[in-house]
Image (cartoon, rainbow, N blue to C red; front, side):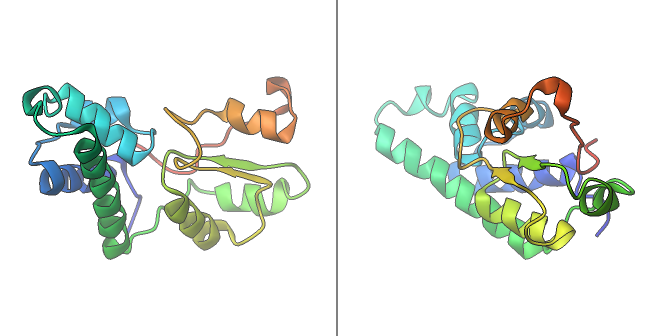
Length: 166
């Protein structure tokens, strides 16, 4: 399917937000929030687009349920597209061969199910010592999370971006 681009992720998220909350998501807002867990991203979009402020009669629980509905719909659309991100040239070989004896981690804002599916498809099982997904943290994932779990200093690490983002 080619590179799993930021634009493709934006389109999927835009569709999920539109279906669940009837909110139009612009690219700029998506790019600013990309990387945080999807339900949290939906809550932020709700705030930015006035969904929360303009619906005072809707309970916080209902708003949270709608955010979770967005996350579920996004996962569903992701699965239905059947696309798999393609890593930069030579990333797979770097991870599986050249760095096979080094501790490795994945840090992603995507849901655990998506991260596991991608990692297994692209690299195979057991290639990473630590996997931190969007279900594991609040806000954007940062490589520092993995460094702590691997007990490494920043000077001992190399960050490799897995795929193109436009």
